[in-house]
Structure formats: structure tokens, C-alpha cells
Length: 249
Image 1 (cartoon, rainbow, N blue to C red):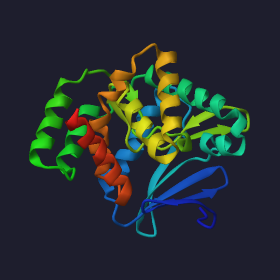
Image 2 (image 1 turned 45 degrees about the vertical axis):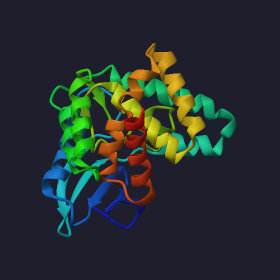
Image 3 (image 1 turned 90 degrees about the vertical axis):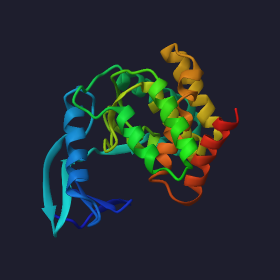
Image 4 (image 1 turned 180 degrees about the horizontal axis):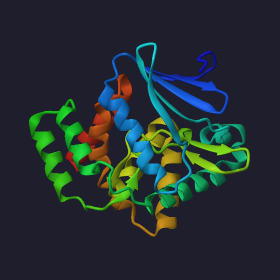
């Protein structure tokens, strides 16, 4: 195993390529439980038949935990949208189709979305009254068992050379109401791309899935509060503003 070709560095993780293998090495601050849970999530999603990299091995590399999986050759939808802006809408439509396909599948052994959000809301930088209101809202939301990615963004979709799409990065996968995943994607696009792209995405998703925007919008303060826990700086402040805005409505 060679660790001389770095392909990505982010959030205390370094990703290497060694031939047809992808090696994700976690920083020393990552717990064994978090690494094994990520690998377990990915293994459970493999069983749904969705196109994702296959887990090969979990091991220690120079005292750090690492996950080895298939290396997927290709370009992310984010990159394709930047390289060919004239086809941006087409790529966004394909992105939505992938999310709808993903949410048509189930992975019964994954953690529950509601439980995951509840744990994170407790840690959010919010006053006790706001956290209580968010928990009450969370308990009132629909309970489903759809496969939810937890970070569904064009940068996590790779289109291979044969045009096969692969969904990457299953660290935050859960089962629950797919509208929550849509709400999070909306926020990621709103702040990472543009409000116009986020609105276009939501319109496309609702048209194709025959759902109403309000289902996703009702989840926005909940997923914003949860996401803020691992966000930093301006991103965290922006996410918490969504919670404050919801309180004022």
C-alpha cells in the first residue's frame, strides 16, 4: 500500500489513491467508534444496490485509522457544472434524479435520522428555550425509513468514464424522512453555490417527486441547527440564522 498520491485533504482526513484503491486516513483525533461507524454505514448502503464505492478493509496506518474502498475514476457533478455551465441545468436534473432513486431504497440497520438530529441539536450553540422548541418540532415530524445521505451535494457525486454515477461519502447516512435530506441539500447549495441554484434544485425535486416544497422547508431549522454543530465560522453563523428566522415566523 502506497500513500504517495494525495487526492483530497479535508476535515482532518487525507485521501490517497493506490491503483484501484482509495485510502481514507483519519486524523489522530478521530475515535475508533466514528471510523468504524462510517465503514459500517457504507457497508450497509452497499446492500441497497446503489452505486457506491465498495469497502475493502478497515485498518491502522502509522497509528491512524483508515478505510480502504474502491477508487472511482471520474468527475464530480460540481466539477462538470463548472466546466460546462451550458449544461448546468441538465446536471442539476440528474443530481435530483439520483437523490430520488436513493430515497426509494431502504437500509433498515442504519441509525435513525430523528435520533441523530436530536443528539446534535443538544450540542448546538442555542439557548435552552430554542433547543426545547426544536426538539418539540422534531418529535412532531413524519417518521419514514427512506435512505438519507446526510451530505448530499454535487461534490459527492462522481460520474465515471462510462457515465455511471457513484454516490460518495456515507459518514452521515441514516434512515428517515427524505425531506430532511432535501432540506440539507437546499442549505448546502444556498450557501455553497447560490440561492438561485438552491431554489432551482428544490423546484426540480418537488416537480419530479410530486411533493410540496413545504415538506422540505419544515425541516430547514432542524437540519440547520444540527449541521451547525460541525460547521465553523461564518458557515455556522449562517446556519444558525435559519433557526432564528424560523423562530420569527
